[in-house]
Amino acid sequence: MHDLGGSGILLTSALFGFQRKYEMYTDTITPPKAAGMAPLQNKITKNKIYNGGLIRYYGAAIQLDSRPSSTIFEAGNLISHNEIYNISRCGIFAFKNQGGNLIEYNLIHDVMLRVVDGGGIHIAAVDSNTNKTFIENNTIYNVFCPMVKKAEQDLGAAKTYRHSYGIYLDIKTSNVEVENNIIWGCNWGVEKSGAFLVNGGGNNDISKNNFDGRVNIIKQEKLKSPTRVLQNTVSQGLVKSLPYDQNEVGIKGNQTNFKSWKDLAEKI
View 1: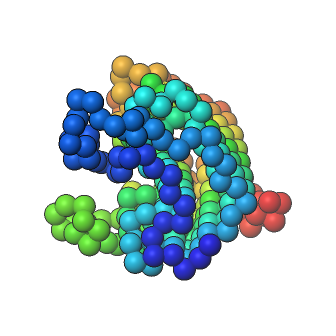
View 2 (view 1 turned 90 degrees about the horizontal axis):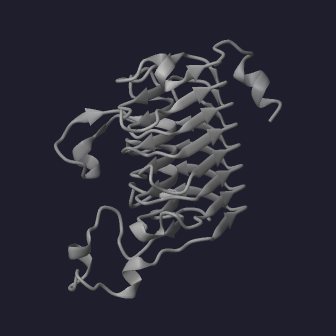
């Protein structure tokens, strides 16, 4: 699948993105049955998706868009053994009420070519009250960080900034397990770029990953179990979370020295 105007594969409910019921349905008290339905228990496997987002930049090679809140405890979707590269924004993006997804054994590289605020794998607006999502055994590299004005991607007032990560748990995303992933080539000399970011939420388990780049755990919520960062290999240090201190967050047993990524890549 290649030379795409926008996303490669899209799974979505009747609501799309930030849409609300009153924007979609005439009768918001008793909306149609479609309002409670979403594509679930699908297998997206063994695809090669490249050269995407040639017209509509703000998308992903594989995009799981908004699900109704009534589906948060149901089994999600499997995304496995795909190769994704040369994409304008995210490799894989999941948004709003996502739970029970398994994202594993994907090779993602050369993404975030045209826009900012995304990543190789980007999960956004997933509350802690969902089935656990698993992100495991993926290889991600060359997640770029272009300098873009917000106005150029319709995100508000014109402001130039840079923002991208290998794996990105965004907008209070919680209850995600990130394990045994290999990430490199995501640091671009600016604060908001790196191998991994948790932006809010809590109750995430980040363990046994190889991160060549900074790891940021920020805006953790005091009312939730904090994100745990355990037994990872990290090349450029951890940024501890506020309001928690390092021990409360559970940043323990992580190594910061290892062989070169060239040596490691030869073993993949």
